[in-house]
Length: 167
Image (cartoon, rainbow, N blue to C red; front, top):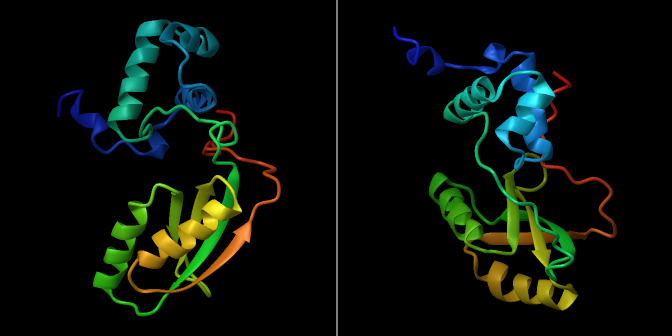
C-alpha cells in the first residue's frame, strides 16, 4: 500500500482537529486563500493545501458555491410543500424525483416519513408566481396526489453549515 492508497477509505474518524477547523472555516467562507487558512490553523500553506485536497478527494468537501440573496434576486417567497403520491412503486418514485428535480423553483427535495412522501423547498417571486408553479409546473408532474403548502413569514436561521463542533 503506497501513501496515496491510505486516503481511499478515509472516514470521519480520520479527521483531526486541524481538519475540523479547516472544514469549519471553509463552511464560513470558502473563498479564503490557502495562505489565510494556514495562518488561522497555525500551519504553513503547503500542508493546508494538501489537507484541503485530501478532504476534497475523500468527499468531505463536495463543492464550493456562492450563496445568493433570494430577496435581491426576486425569489424571496419561501414555501415548504408537502407532497403525497397517488401510488407508490420504485418506478413511480424515480419518475417523480426526475421530474421534480427538473423544476428550477424547487431548491431542495427530501423523501420523508410520516403523512407525506416528499418535502419540497420552493423559492418563488410572490404568491401569484407560486400559484402558477402549483397549477402549471407541479400540476404537470405525474402521480402527485396532494400538495400541502406552508408559507414562510420570516426566516429565522438559515445555514448550509454541517455542525462539526469547534475542532
